[in-house]
Length: 595
Ligand SMILES: Cc1cc2nc3c(=O)[nH]c(=O)nc-3n(C[C@H](O)[C@H](O)[C@H](O)COP(=O)(O)OP(=O)(O)OC[C@H]3O[C@@H](n4cnc5c(N)ncnc54)[C@H](O)[C@@H]3O)c2cc1C
Image (tube, rainbow, N blue to C red):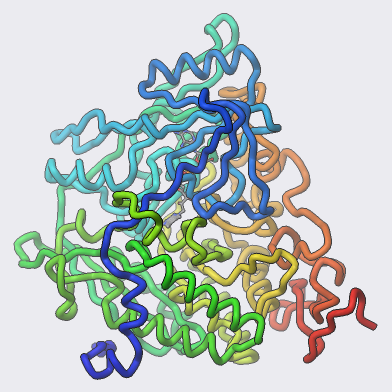
């Protein structure tokens, strides 16, 4: 099994060192609170996400924010809001979701932050469960469980997510084994505070477990059922894993993708389509007697030097403005070969990567996110996407495609690469396409079939009217995935268009809506965006000049693209039903309307 290594000489030659500077391991400034209030009594507030930018670039407003520190306080807050018929949304410490899930309806709503609902309440070693408040992060779950010799077997790779947020959006890691990789499928009890009628003093605390039908709605709730107060998660005895990345040609990726996840418990694949390569993560549970104290500290989740991030961003902006696809291809190879050479941040002992396999305990390998650890350092460093750094600014398109059709989907992308070999180099600047396995779930809004989740990040211009290099190819892949292959978008990521008609893909959507009606008949926890996603309102897509460039719409007219810059609405190259912004003229045309 061959894999690339950066030796001292090749390190110098390949400029690996420049990129390692980006991932320097020092403490960084913690992310800002996404909620800001203009007065010091927590009123006149705004909320955004951790990237500082929603898909439509708006900032949401709320009249007030409340920070309960116990379930009792939470109950009083929900009761008072329900009595006043105030619109409510639950917010978290970091607000990681890209779409506007966290915005209360209107501008006079209430945000209930789970920032101080951050305690691990009970670890039951006998039952192998942990009960936490909903603002507890994945990192806390992992660390506290490990202290008792227990582990959450699967979960997201980024440990800054809260338990409430993971249940809110169906967050997952990668596995087809056991109950699969979605955190909500390890929930065995959920306590949720919902509005009540006057006879109930305007509030209800509902305790749900697998014996209640309503539990399957609460497992993935989009935040519309009420405030999850506490969650009990099922754990396993702590175990060890053995991880090795194997890089191969992507010529048989379609076939491999359908079976690889059945062969290895924690398998995932990182695909570099323009290099025609894929890195397979061969990752299995092994005996705890095997020696090894490996650690995963994923480079892109480490504190980044702000200055270096700004240089990288400026380079990318320059490549875009000069249409320098070759530059992106060179950059993409540099990033991916460096990450591969340094094992993506895996080390054999917490310090050095000396070769595969990396063996270690689950709690040290399952997730990371050291850019959150931080003393303030005046923004010398931070998380790479922190809006205060002029660094990463991207779209993130993430959807799961059923394993039964994944081969065809991959082959369609490969056809596009054959037609436009440089079109996907830009993705490789963001480490390519991360492909993770997700199992079918009994959650009403969970995955409907065993699937492979594709996570794609790519350049977003600061100017919403500016088209991207190979705009059309990315748009075509997005439409291929969700419309031709029926892919399910991740609820917490993505651009508006992929949510068009999404609810029709969930066979138990009707059951979910019944529970929503029962828990919150006045829709206090609903908003325009959640109503649109749930098919209760039109308007997921926003049609206006340039809307397709930002993924707010699928173009149906040239004006939805950028005709003055040579981009017109045309059918896809492989998927003829797609409508994408295609560059037709080789010279830019800066006039208002081109003949
Ligand atoms: C760097 C990074 C890495 C990521 N990695 C992964 C990954 O590996 N796998 C993956 O699947 N996703 C990943 N995500 C996306 C992520 O899954 C979702 O965006 C996410 O689950 C959000 O968690 P959060 O705690 O920030 O919640 P938020 O985004 O703040 O909230 C999400 C939704 O849940 C609701 N909610 C939150 N708490 C409660 C509560 N107590 N009661 C009721 N509703 C509540 C909110 O109202 C909102 O609707 C990543 C995101 C980032 C930024």
